[in-house]
Image 1 (cartoon, rainbow, N blue to C red):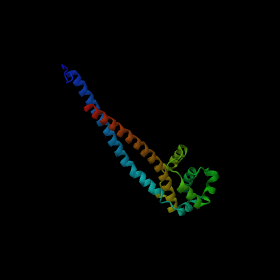
Image 2: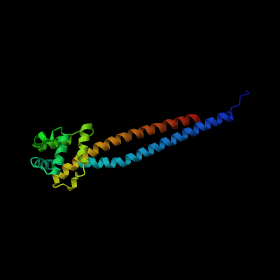
Image 3: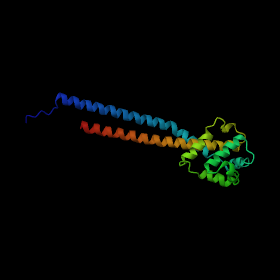
Length: 190
């Protein structure tokens, strides 16, 4: 009967401070959500462009490069070396065999699981695809250009896919944090 329904000024201040801290946390969580979404919106078009390059390769392109295996230009050596890396073949001993059956090589390349390339292959591919002289548009021959763009596309696709996956995870975590704080604020104000 004599109980005061209002909290003491000190208790009210602590509650207000807790709510302010929760609101600040919620605001920061929503900001992380926006940043993660913005990063994703930048990377996804790059990923799609890299994937488009992968689908432009033809069996004729592979055959053109394969014909150069016995006397390759410096640029062809780079492309053939990259193909050898992707197919787990030694350049010195297996390039000729690898390139001897262009239709099979093409089919193997097209069916390759580009989402699950080993770290070792990615590192070797990076050492080729990021070289200053690995400029597919400057290479002689449409086939060599296409195979080299495809190699670069695989490398970019793999790295961008990893980035997208990480950004999706960050976005999900930020959304969950924002949802948790919103729920807590709702419960506190009820």
